[in-house]
Image (cartoon, rainbow over all chains, first blue to last red):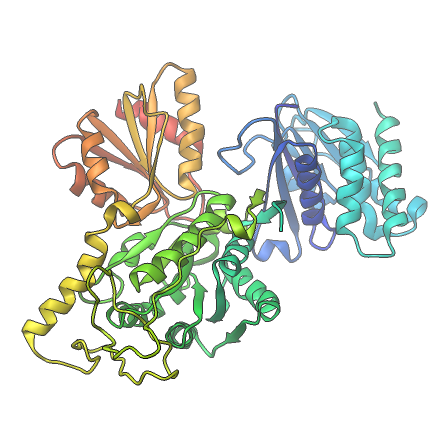
Length: 180
Length: 377
């Protein structure tokens, strides 16, 4: 996965998945990797399932779209129903623990962790679920360094929320460690 | 100012480049997927002493940009789909009145309001023939965020140098994707400014001085009094109905481009050294082609790509020469067959020309191109 990783982040509009995609791509660039971020763009971004995609690679990325994701994140049931089965055989599916998977499909390696609940209960704000999710993904995949992702998060979040977001990242790392 | 490394959208890079190229006036009417161009111009222009105006519609948007340029400010407008259709008459006006202007068209699915949020490359022929009558056209097609930056600078320089509207023909994929870009320092960017008349010069507004390419351009409203019209006009700028004059003037309009093709035309040859099969492409589709070529080569099929960077004027001489080496050429583009016609015209009987493309808002994937190449071979 580390030479060319395709990531699909899905959930509902407003969960900050586009921002999560941008943060992952910016962290990759800080690590001197190549990254491309694209998003679904249209009415579906306003309600229903929305997605943001990132490719992180060590070499040139030609075709910019994600075709066979190595990691799929699904934060909601609707997003999971639409995108979870797109993860490739050797990939990782990260789902919120509220999500129920249809067992007629294959999903690669499933990582089911309480992302939204951790944001609410441990960090104190549901709005940082996207940052918790980044923590989970970074710890699971090591695609970008912790140092760069923290820098990228702090560069993008509103002033005054730095500690909250650092805590969210740290909780994400812990969630991932609990399943590794 | 030093180099900056950033993650940026194509549309953002376009505005960044326009400001560095000297854009100081933007007039337009926001339309998906070009809206970021209007938003970011509105946000940044005031810090550069520039002006942004949102007009009542697309036609007024380009008209105001023409006015801004005539008054002496490098001007840009941006649009997509139906907006590009609406701008056509004024593109012709800028062409005949020789007004430098950059028009960005972030292509989306058409016809009509079509597919507002989906990519397409369906305006290639419209970029050349959309406005009526014979006229010069320069259209540039970037395939990445970095190239969007570079070609935006180039679009301003060509517009100023040749006193002509220049179309940056990008698409939703390149416009909205984010990738790494290294923004050069201002002092490392080559900027061309229009030639203006000297203060005490007896000004003949549409007379080209010996050894120059186009007439010198006075800021309208500053000292030199002159007339500007969409009618054929003589050197004085006043209308003339004479066919002799019309011929002289049209020759001038066409020749300023045709006699400088080496300066204007740009293309890329990708893995062509040992290529046995040729794919012609441009814009975001060229990225799909690169992926496909790598996959084909992994299977022992030596494919290469000729990528047109200036779509218009087309890289005719080079493509004609290359085509002699290939029995078969595949043209990949996001439409049902447009630039393929230009390629057929250029390569004549040298090669059989095939086409792959669709116009349903979905991009062609590398594996589809791989399969098409195998089918054609």
